[in-house]
Amino acid sequence: MQLLDGRITAEGIRKELALAVQERKRNGKKIPHLAAILVGNDGGSLTYVGAKVKACDQIGFESTLIRYDDSVPEDILLAKVHALNEDKSIDGFIVQLPLPAHIDELKITQAIDPKKDVDGFHPVNLGNMVLNLPGFLPATPAGILELMKRNNIETEGKNCVIIGRSNIVGTPLSIMLGRNANPGNCTVTLAHSRTQNLQEICLKADILIAAIGQPDFVTADMVREGAVIIDVGTTRVEDLSRARGWRLKGDVDFDNVAPKCSYITPVPGGVGPMTIASLMINTLKAMELKGK
Image (cartoon, rainbow, N blue to C red; front, top):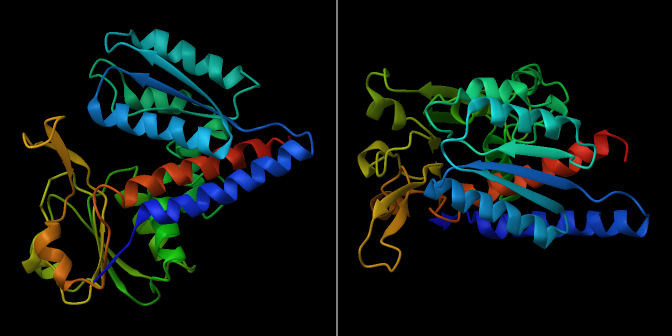
């Protein structure tokens, strides 16, 4: 068993981006500027936004964090999105999800200028992804593919099972892995809450990707010997042995599944850092597309 270490792979990407920023500085060109809107105090969101700001600092990007409490009216949030769309100093921005229940996430996502949608969630970018046209790829699926590519994971002709059909991970990832590309050329099964005989289906997977948000959902009896396991889950669970009182758990029962695998991502330190790295790649791309 080998770890697919997202931290190490993402560090390599950050170094490449930092060199690109230094080159831009030498040529007197604009430095990429990423903005993030954070609503409320969700623990996972705080962690991820903090990591995104830190990545900007390490690479040399400019960054702006805009915070609202969880009672912010939807129209105020929409107004800020429109303001960022018009702000020429901002190359790309994200609205960190999830949002409070009184805010329509789809309405907010659709309000973002597709040319600044570095999370890749806007319907225009998702449509371009489906048609394999230029645009911003969703950050987590793109990060998973980059992790596979840089670690020489063979995908051509492999059976890939994805558990979870969300619009930001499972569904776009199924399309990307089915493409005639590298990574790609998989035979993909997209499983979900209505899937019957899930264990039987998973046991046929050369590559098993868990993106369902249920800790330890994938157990050893669902995994074939030698499979590649990608764990997208990051759920906070209580752990009183730690000072902060919690720890992150993935969707895979790591301790029991790992011995059966050829490769497996850890949680934390697997897919998460690659999501952030993909966001940074998209931010640089957003600025370059403007010709600055």
